Figure 1 (cartoon, rainbow, N blue to C red):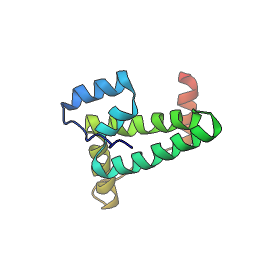
Figure 2: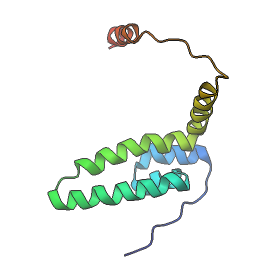
Figure 3: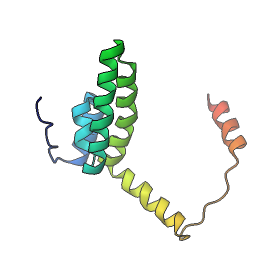
Figure 4: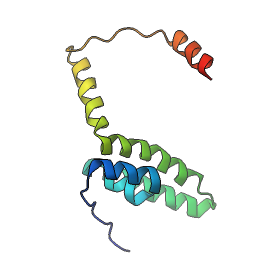
Length: 112
């Protein structure tokens, strides 16, 4: 078995562009921090093993799409910004206004 390549540090904007164009497990893994990279590796290997058993790549494609979003958030720095906001809300430093979910759905339906 070959070893997993270590990520290559690069410009975040270039990494985000590569994520948009390549959409490969290798580039997704490269965009993730070490703690999430290990989780991705585990889930990816399990999805590949299952795909080999059932001759269906649907689970692999679903996993790649899910992790692509996470990788994009990390590559652009948005993940850290979101988590900082979450922590501020939890600490009571930021007030969160109630959201009318029904109204949001109606707006979404209007916009198609």
